[in-house]
Length: 574
Image (cartoon, rainbow, N blue to C red; front, top):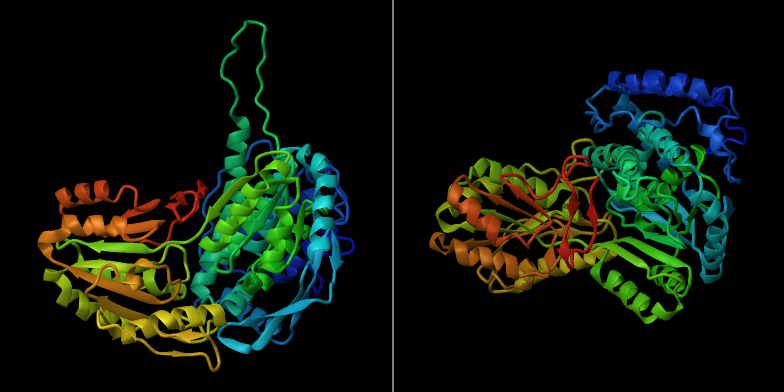
C-alpha cells in the first residue's frame, strides 16, 4: 500500500493488506494478526474507518471498542534472527526509505500544509543521507492550529471513551503487525537506534503505551464514590478534558515518548498540538499517519513541526493554553515555565506543566556486589543507544578493594562493543543524534584529555566525517566534584570515582548531593546492612531506584518511571 491514508479506507482493503503480509510475520505476530483480522471483519458492515478530515460518529468503531478492556500484557519482543521474516521485513523497509526523502507537511484540521520553510532530517550515522524534508509552522499557522483545536474540543471531549480508546487499540494492533517494520526502520535510520533498541522503543514500548494507557484510563473512569451521603442522593464522578489545548513537546530519543505525549491527553478527551523533535521527524510522522488511518478525527491532534522557540513563544501567549506535556532539556523547560508564569494573568485556567528533563544517573558498587553483574549492567546502561537515554548510567562509584577486578573486566567488556551504522545488525553503539550532540559530548571528552584530575582508560576518540560517532569512553576521576561527574552529558561517556572502602557512608552522601538531577540510580551489593543504609541515604536521589540491576530498562505496566529535582515532575504510572 503506497498511501498512509486511503481515500476510502474500507475494511476489505485493510483485510487484503493483512493477508498479503501474513508471510512476513513470525508465529507471535500471526496470532496477533488473526485477532486483528477478526476485529476488521466485524467492521465490514459499517463504513470502516472514519474520514480523517471530519469528526466521525462514535458509532463507527462501536464493534471494535468494548466496555470491558481485555487483559493487557506487554508486547512480546521479536528477536530478528538471521533469515527470520521480521528481519527480512526490516531490511526491506530500510531499503525503501533509503531510496527517497520523505516530504513531511504540517497537518492542521486534517489538512496537509506545505509552508515552503523547510529543514532536513539526516541519518546520524550517515549525515549525507537526507531521509526527510519537513515543513515548519510559523506563528500564524500555530495560532490557526490553536483556533482549530478549540473548535473541535467540545465534541471530542464529549466523545465516548470507548471510541477514543478504540483508536489507540487499533493503532497498537497495526504497529504490532502491518507497520512494525516501517516504524522500526524509520527509528533506526532517523534516530540511529540498532535493531534491538528500536524494537524495545518503537515497537514494544509504543504499543504498550497505547494498550496500557487505555487500561489505566478505564480504571480511572470506573472510580466512583462508593456510597451515598444521603439516602436518596446519587453521586457521580465525571472526568472532563481540560478547558483548552495541550501542547506536547517530544524528544528525539524515544519514538514511543513522542507517541505517548500527544495521545495520552487525547485519550482523556483533550485536544493537542504536537511538536515533534526535528531529529525524530520521520518516525513521529509515520506514527501520526497511522493514528489518522485508525480514525483519529481531524483537529484532535494537530501535527506541527516547528522551530522550538517559535512554537514555545506562540503557545504561551494563548489564553487557551491548558497544559504543556514535555520531555527535553532543562533550559527549554525552564524557559517555558518562566514564560507561563509571566503570562498567568491571561490564561482562562492555571496551565499544568508536566516535564521530564533527563538525569545524571549512578551505579554505586559495594564490596559485597557480584562484579560480573555490575559489569554487564553498567556497560549496557552507559552505552546502549550511545548513552542517550534519560536513565543512562553516566557515573559509577566503586570500592578501592574491588577496583582492579572491576577495571579489568570492564575494559574487556568494552572491547567487545561494536560501533557502527545502526542498520547493521551486529552494531551495539551507533552515532549520536546530531552535530550539536557531537560537539557537546566531544567537549567533555576533550576536558577529560586535558584535566590532570581525569584519566581516560577506554575510548576517547571521535569522528564526524561520515556520521556523528563518539567512541564509548570510560573516565576515572580523583575529584568527585569534577564537572564530568556532575553534569549531564547525554552521550557514551562513563565516569568512575574510586572510593575508600571505609568511606562508603560519606560517598553515599556525595552521590546524593553532587548533582541537581534525580531520575534513576542503582546500588549493587549483597550485604543487607549496606542495602538498608544505601536505600535510606539515596531515598531522594532517584525516582527509579534499582537494587542489583542497571539504572535503565523500566517496562510499562511493571515499573513506574519518573524523577524529581531537575529531572522534572513527570511520573509515568503506565
